[in-house]
Image (cartoon, rainbow, N blue to C red; front, side, top):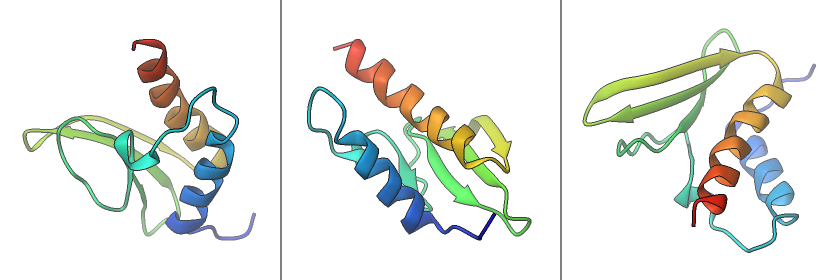
Length: 88
């Protein structure tokens, strides 16, 4: 698999989100390389080219998932988005 960067992942997520029943702002649900805390997932790519899905709240890392698979990271992102949309 070719290297993929955070901007490309964000673009894929934005494109896929167009299939959702309502328009959303991706950065309301997840950030890409810019940890905002507040339990909002942040996506990072580490030196080993692993995708990292990290949730931090009040400076405490609550969850960290690591994968090499792009489909996994996309699933985790949309798991958060769809849960939040369904909870409205």
